[in-house]
View (cartoon, rainbow over the protein chains, first blue to last red):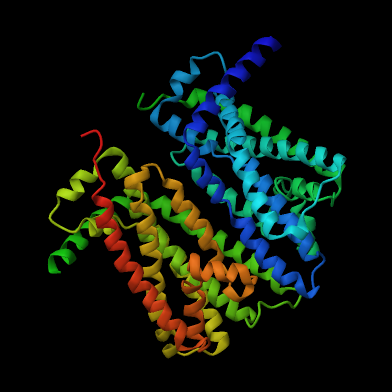
Length: 263
Length: 260
């Protein structure tokens, strides 16, 4: 059982890795299109020169570099692919296979991470050349926890988006849901500013949502500023469990609804 | 010229008729742009809440820049995204052949074929924001009118850059995401260029001319920055527009069609 699962995972990973590497140039552009944190880095570094904010310019450079990296590894696009599969009826052929189609999407995302890795590190290297004083090494425990948090953040984000994707069984444009969801994700996840710079009331409220754990939490671990570690991991696990349950329920309901349009 | 106007009317009439089939979409996009607006205001507020100011830009003046950015965003959703992102598909599937056979300029056809009304909420919200901050700053109609000039230049610059990137698909075929890179960099236009460190300012003025899209129009409205910037903005727009046209004709020489 376990042996078979491992084999399937290995095969899927290598197949999708080959796909991804085929479009290397495209991949570079996807990496470059994630420059939003780097733009905000510029703004915050300039703003922090006057010592008016809680963080120093160096810490801000580190923070936004970490945000850039975490974001690179948690990019998810499953909703657009799933929506197309349902609308065009291509899902039918995947349903015949003895593997839940979710795993295909999951491994295609995972293998893309490996293909993306070298470019992302290249860009970080370039930035460290520009800001040599900001170079830092995460402490070993923080590094391990930060990596774990990044992996969990990716899983949670994938799970959330896949759950919204299941709405495609009922509505034609499920991706509109993701467009909505993306707004709080952009502004509350810590992508525009570390949570330490939010007004206290907003921060307290935001910590109850899943958003800060997707970017702020792993990024702050990576720059050696851990913030309520146990609580953060607990929140991630809870949100994942919630979305997992919702996801499986919607999947069962949706399959009954699915009529294989267009196939 | 008259023929082009007639064609344009037909293009846009059919496009709007087609888009209006999805009326629910309009509500959704309006809500999304409203949410985006709230988010951007929140982002700006994070900077200003401690009393910090972007060098020489008060809160209202920064809002002006954000309003101009939102208007341009609406413009690109209405015209640039639906048209220019399709160049890639046309090249990939070889349907560009049909465009080239038509007795009108292919650049015109590719740039104006579709119009999508979904950018209008953004334009509207942007105008409201400009109106609000302009009112607080005591701007007059003459000031707004003055800003129309650099804003138009900005729109032309944006279009030309986008079109040239789209045109490179003749060589590279699958370059959807090149325009995504451009879009990502344009996000910098949400904030006045003075808010960035020196290296960023150079980059966003000379490499990717974001400064000319939002900051220069805002400065013109506020009578800051002098005529030099206005002149540069006009020059840039004209040069880029001519270059885009030349570049397209050059690129077409390498077009070898596909699957037809």
